[in-house]
Amino acid sequence: MEERARQLLLLAAVSGAGAAFGALSATAVFNFISRSKRREGYVRNLLESNGGTGGSAGSGARMVDRSNLLSDEVVAEQLTRNIQFFGVESQKKVTESFVVVIGLGGVGSHAASMLLRSGVGRLLLVDFDQVSLSSLNRHAVATRDDVGTPKASCLKKHFSLIYPECQIEARVQLYDPSAEEEILSGQPDFVLDCIDNIDTKVSLLAACVRRGLRVLSAMGAGARADPTRIRVADLSESINDPLSRSVRHRLKKDHGIEGGIPVVFSLEKPKAKLLPFQGTKEEETPSDYQIVPGFRVRIIPVLGTIPAIFGQVMASYVVTQLAKFDFQTEPVVNLDVDHYRVLHHRLLEHEELIYGSAEQVLVDVQEVMYIVKELWRGRSARDQNMKDTGRKMWRSVNELMLVRWDKSKPADVSNLILLKFSEADAHESSTLDQIKAEEPEFYAMVSRVLKRAETEFAL
Image (cartoon, rainbow, N blue to C red; front, side, top):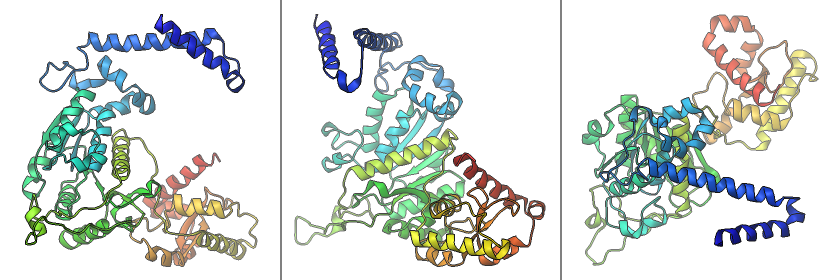
């Protein structure tokens, strides 16, 4: 009777809003409720017939074929939205993957949580630290009952209730060079660096580069508030971030590494600084409070939402990489609209000089912005190594111009490349056949980029 009453109340609410929602028959409402109840019953029966939720490790967890997790009814149902998004074969790549997450605080816990919920089949979770009461403002799953327990163990406990089929190893351990072989062996498909200590972060990133492991690194998430400024880019492109600057310097100085590492960072300048150390006794120093030598004890003010978003961004990037789902990250190009106007005007002048008219220029300033920023990332087509950022990029724009790739076609979004002045002169005196014969890799790269523009503009 109570269920029937709820249905009638729902029907009354829908009827009362009829003017806003249009005609919705009682039959349609009851059919919707009926389908929902059947679906709920199906899922409940599916879980019960397959051993329930699976519980935590060691509590009689369900037996599944780990070589093909998607063949399991419960797993397939749980991951149905991902399967619909990626397709079965791509989602299978995710469920067969092995990911290492090092650092399980505000960033790392959220990254690991979404990797788990996305169906990653094996996770290694590494952190030496414990859950604190003050970390509950940003931790993905920890509760007050978890305060004082190791972060790695805390995540494993909660994760086993969410996706017990995932093979999870939790290590209460500090990453340092002596732990490299133990933690990075086993050929992980991806490593997530969520460490906030410079020494261990640099050591980890250098080890991943040396071993040829794919790694994604989180830069500073503390003291920020603007979620719209979070980006994924090469380490060499990360700006306005003191941690990025220090990591770049150390990697270049100690290991000869200048880039090639994707990072999540914020374009926003930090809104606050480290809080001053306050001991309980006059003679105490910060080192008296260090859990591990070399680790900071002063506190960075943190708005809990920002490290959470960092972690979500990391998980999304890694899952799409594992699934081989292609997308273009937002380029970090520090230009304002005046720079794009200059490039557009320069194109018009060049067309008049070479072709006697600018009538074949079929782009405006907004489309020039797309070409320069999205296609060529603010750099010459012959210099796509992303080495200039900030003020250096502004200076380099003064040496750039747009020219036609194929001189027999109009200057539209799918036929313009960005080159330095000297490169543009050389390009105008050559043919596409010559470029294809003498520089096949460059020809293929440019063709691929321009094909993207053709697809995105439906040309």
